[in-house]
Amino acid sequence: MYHGGMRVLVVEDEPKIASFVRDGLEENDISVDLCQDGDTGYEHASSKPYDAIVLDIMLPGRDGLSILRSLREQKNEVPVILLTARAELSERLEGLNLGADDYLTKPFFVEELVARIRAIARRASGENLNALEHGPLTVDLLTRQLHVVGKEIELTTREFNLLAFFLRSPGRVLTRTQILEQVWGYHFDPGTNIVDVYVRRLRQKITPNGEPRLFEAVRGVGYRLLEINDGE
Ligand code: CA
Image (cartoon, rainbow, N blue to C red; front, side):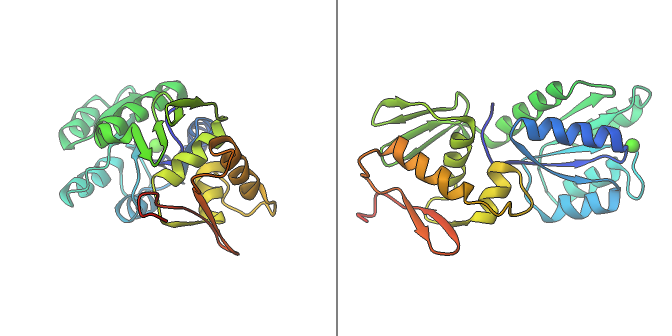
């Protein structure tokens, strides 16, 4: 497990590979935007922040190498993993020269792709991504451990991802829609109060006596992780 809220763009036109990659990443708590042609892929890649891009080379519309070249020309340093066919040796080398971070030759195991994504995302974001502190909380995103005033608290995968999502945006109101998308991977509102249930559960696990107050409900919108050092 890495951490919740990681978002990856997959640009792949072969439907079978595309859905196998998407499902595999989502099972590993990575949110996926999927584009099946090069033009849409480039649009997404150049307009949204991603933790990594998984980029096929042969695509309808713009090809993968042209997308990569344009991104690097714009100083966009998002980590890129190329998907190449066995025969595409020269394309693979050109891709690495253009600034691709890694490549995988088809066919591949999705676990391998997940491991590569985690490795390059970690490299790209340096150390501070792994450890987060907030008031009495210390969270290690790599080992997925939470300590509250030095005491380890066990969280489920979902609870941990939810907490990690809050910790990356302290003080900011996160809407239920954002939370559902980032933590559950839903692109729709399931019409349940699942977010409220999980926030309540987190609260009870982390601060059973209610102190310090960590989460604030924003009526009709969502929740905010309160800044702790402001003497709130
Ligand atoms: Ca292709």
